[in-house]
Amino acid sequence: MTALAARIERFALSAPFSIARGSKTEAVVVLVELTRDGVTGRGECVPYARYGETPEGVLALVESLAPALAQGLDRRALQAILPPGAARNALDCAFWDLDAKLAGTTVADLAGVTVPPRVETAFTIGLGKPQAMAQAAARAAHLPLLKVKLGGAGDEARIAAVRQAAPHSRLVVDANEAWSGDLLVPLLSACAACGVELVEQPLPAGADAALADIAHPVPICADESVHAGLAGLSGRYDAINLKLDKTGGLTQALALADGARAAGLDIMVGCMVGTSLAMAPALLLAAHARWVDLDGPLWLVADRPGGLGFADGRITPPEPGFWG
Image (tube, rainbow, N blue to C red; front, top):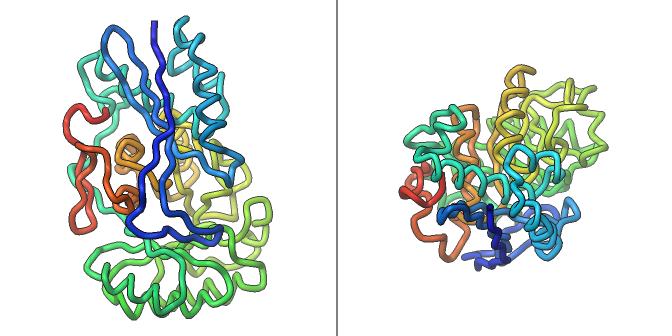
């Protein structure tokens, strides 16, 4: 019998986190705990309004499975019970943690993957006016990889300001669907001129056909356009952003990573703004990834105790027993 406990938790941010769709000052997560034979596995998800999710709705969906869990629902059966999304992610990751603890091993061993001892991660520069973004980039200019949030009109100035402020950092940019078709070519050219390595989701999901008809002077990465499958990406994208809250957990993310590599797509591992409990499972995808963007805990006033280590733009795994 597997017992379920779940709740909504809130973590204050040290500064507003701004993207093209708006700003927030706290991370609202759903924590899931699965207990069997006195052992507890944990998982965390970040419900996202962009996909029609609310913390209350995700919590209710998770709690609705308590009877099925008590009757033997396991991780593999879970994949058919819930669609991809935040609720399935938290449950899936809690199952991985529980199964590894019960087996006396690690999730990495169960999944057959190797987690590097240190992983380079991007640090995010939030959307704002060029001068403010340049100031933020200057403070982070010692870091190896910066991810720059963009918003459409005026992005040439934002990109140039960040590049001038952080001349030695590698750059990727994320438009969060904010570009329009007429901006696509000039903004891609501006990115190329500033040495940007990757442009993430320039056009809205469902309105990205134009990406197949233009040159890609900078590789283009699908984020909102990819969830649990690769349909519709061919010819439009050069990479995909794997986020566990989109794939519905580590199980599907591992399968999607295999599919992406077979299709010749590069991989970014990304995150929502959450705690180390949300990042630790995603770290298992790092060996597959060309870019890792798991800086969510760095935006928090306080992370969960025992979480990931962050130093000089690199991540080290959490303390034993934290997850996995």
